[in-house]
Image 1: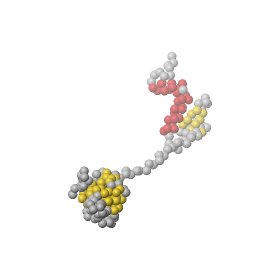
Image 2: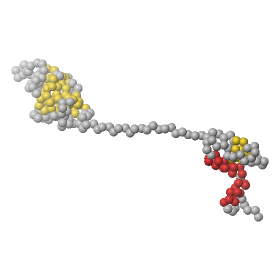
Image 3: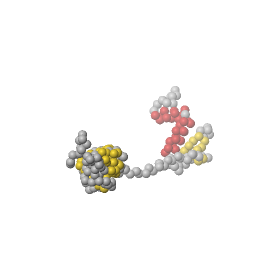
Length: 220
């Protein structure tokens, strides 16, 4: 009695598979040969009398011809350029960067009446003024005084219009930030009804501190 082609040992089952599916077997064999071969390997092809096509890396029969195979597809990866890691940014010195610095009062083109010639300035500093920084006050282009606080009262300012601005400086006097210039007109009237104070520029100094309800500053 003939055994089924897939009965018995591994070799017997393999032989049975080849017996039943010869074309599939040779296709698998060809794939194995191509996978194991090198780029310049030659594959030969011949046809048996029963029409079976045979392949091998060596000609086994007379009349075997070299098989024309498509060229192997190769891939060369594109080299990726090495990227240097960005250098860490140096931290900005503490307190050196102010987001805004301006004179909040008096506003530009404002008239202020004070017979004693006092003029209170309010500086808006964001973030708050560093302890090691100071504000230099300039009136009509000349330095009038310096304050460690954002509220300062200028004393004995002469009547008339004055151009005022502030400059934040460090311990060495280097400028860090500057406000826009505002124009303020100071009006001074004497008890007798006449104008008090001489015309021209500002005089005397500045007193700094927190302004009280009466608008006067306190000495540092």
